[in-house]
Each structure stands twice: as C-alpha cells, then as structure tokens.
Length: 78
Image (cartoon, rainbow, N blue to C red; front, top):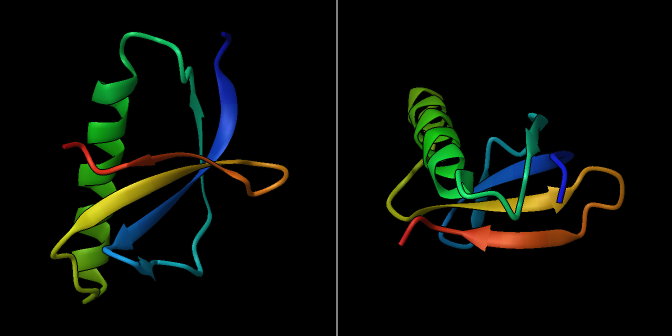
C-alpha cells in the first residue's frame, strides 16, 4: 500500500488530549517502518501534551482517515 494522509488523535486512556489541534501525517499502514513512525509521533505528541499541562498516564494514538475521520488503527505501542 502506498503512503497516504491520515489524522492522528492522541489520548490519555479514554480522554482525548490536544483535541483542538490537527495533526496530519503521511504513513504507509502496511510498511515495515510503521511502528517506528508511530513511536516517534507518540513521543512527540506526549511531550507536547505534557507541555500543555495535559495528563498523560496512558498515552495512545488513533490513526484516522483524514477525510472521513474513521478510526483505522488504535495504537499504544505495547
């Protein structure tokens, strides 16, 4: 599959943090480097959330279709 544009949403458990910000990335969901890319994004967004005084005890990402908003991947790095 080719790399496509997706929207990332970051959560602390069930609570969406940084919800007023829009994070759009280009990812290949079938590529071998997907986990490394998601680790990088999760770390960067966790740092940004902590800087904004958001709680981040259990961070996770949702990778969503950029047009429809449908959740394609729920990823915590575990």
